[in-house]
Amino acid sequence: MSDQGPVGLNPKRRDFLVKLAQGAALAGTGGLLWDYILHNEARAAPYALRPPGALDENDFNAACIKCGQCVVDCPPLILKLQPAGGNLPIGMPYFEPRTGPCIMCPDIPCMKACPTGALSPSLKKIEDARMGLAVIDIENCLSWKGLRCEICHRECPIKGKAITLETHPRQISKHAMFVPLVHSDACTGCGICEKACPTTVAAIRILPHKLVQGKIGEHYRLGWTFDTEVTQDFKAPEGQSAAPDAAVPKTAPGVDYLNQGGL
Image (cartoon, rainbow, N blue to C red; front, side, top):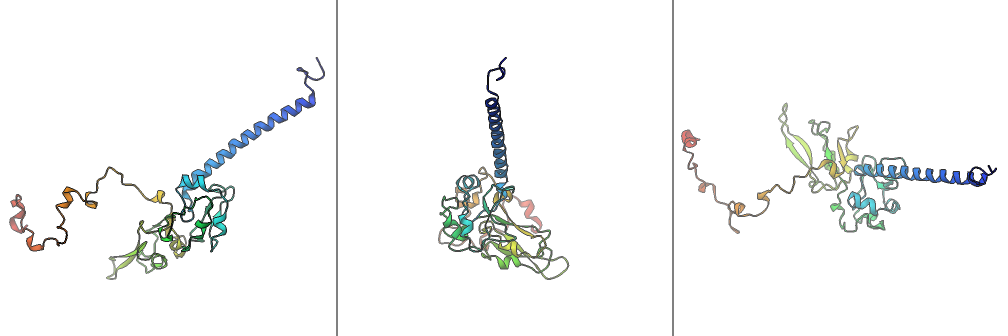
């Protein structure tokens, strides 16, 4: 048998090939591990609050190149880039309302700085942004407990539309409670309310829409929301008011047993 081994291969060359193969295996394993990490981070992305104008999750992840231009051009510097080892994809821009809410810049500089359209230029007014949705924990909200607070309502930049106050009766007092209500059609998810909430842990939080909003389903037909042959019968002709109370019959024909005794 040759000194070069059973296959006649030079020992140094054999060692080189073995190390090369080991390196290739390690690189392949590392690639699989990195792919696993990225996929795990991508699954955590639904919990992120992205800058105004961000595309839907999958489109945003595909379009965002993690360049950080939106972070640089954010005037209050509330946007951050996710570092390695976090719960979000590495380099993804995000913000945390409790420490730094979006201040609703009218010119939307972060969106204009985006070179790929991940922050869509179709957003023309900051009031139309939908970064998330405010959700109130009524068990810990001071106003819902009967105390006078309403800070979220006063601080809301779209006060009277995104957050309104509703009066509720008290059980132990003649004075009414003023409780905040959030309206999803106007809430931008800026997080100013969460930042301003005086409770130790904010009783109003901004969450991604998909985590807090349901979907009624297209098979439900809400006839009263659009004109049909049925709903037309309940509407007064155009230019005329509804029939006065005097025109409403006092009794309902066909149910005489209910009309007896003044019913």
